Length: 497
Image (tube, rainbow, N blue to C red; front, side, top):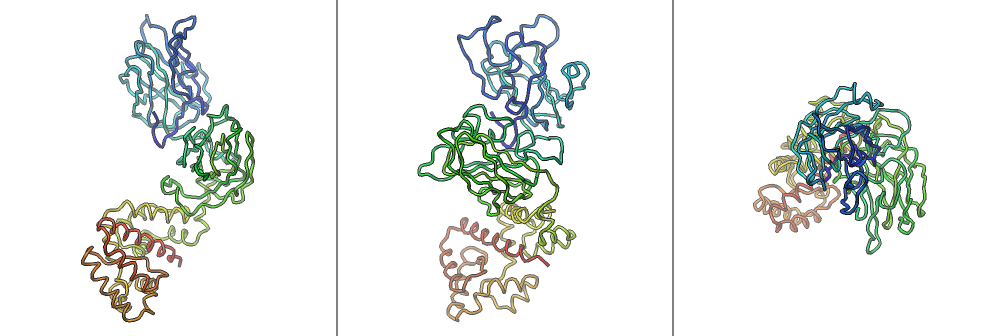
């Protein structure tokens, strides 16, 4: 079980450890945070009884309950837990609760006797031999968890899913490391092992402890996108291929961009990635260090490998910084510096849909052009049909008279005339065909023909109009919305004073 978008904070794979338990007679507390799923060995016994892959206390014959204290490998905000009881069928605890505290460096004795604990999961019923996902009722930044079981029994795994909150620093760190808040967002393939393995602390211990893709047929390329734990200036990247002796990639490259909170799906095809490390050859079972050719700052990096294979670790060494590319960009600085009313007027010139304008206003301040244009796309495609039609209504018909443009669309007449410059040199036959086509289009779809006219001749626009006349209406609405998105981006670029 995993919770999408959240990091597992307690696993020993990220440095978590079981600090203290009231009792672990049958099975040691360290199993509770083992990274691998629990297993059952039917014939395996120890001198104390049946071997179990989990934490198991003896049968309690005195008052009270058992507990185990876990130090998180990555301090953070815990949002959900899984109290898994796999293979504990006649010996699982019927109830459990979880407490938390923020006590960096606290001793086991202090955690047991002196620290004040905050309940984050009230007592809940546990199912035997199953995942038991539970929601957290109290948020905070925690360093330790205390699992309470009532009255005793066995728990296979405790998984704590959340958002890392590492201590702030201005020293050089691994910006991509899990313990610093880095996380894998998306990858082309993870058939043999998951992408988050790349960001684990310490060296990999075996081939399955890295990220490995299937063999590509025919040979192609694979990639993984990583959100850095904090924006930073990159000095060096380290790509390790340890334990990949017959299956490392032949080559690899790294790119970066700056877009805080970017949706993963929009990063996959984003055209704003900048080269951080050029495509370079890799060796098997080796550490490769590369100086950054562009240090950013960046919020995300993309590792590209050719044609396929396995990488054990990715380290992005750099310095956290609050500086953003937008501070040096005239367009971004201009938009961020406008008052709310001034920004609303400027954005309305770019797109007439009111909810689009308000959505983009709410996204200010923009940290980069990628952030500005990316959020414009995000807001636009989360609007409804009525919003799109409202935006279409702020455009003149293709081929409209310039004076008519000025009368009806004073705020954008110059832009529209420039965008439709290809119409000016058209002959009468093409202009008449455009007028006839516009009327037929409006009669069929109920709104004017929308096309990003910049750089297109009248004949090209006429051909597009005729090709789209037979489209299915729901599909055509989305095509028109895509054209509007392109128009909006071009107009946003013109807002530099």
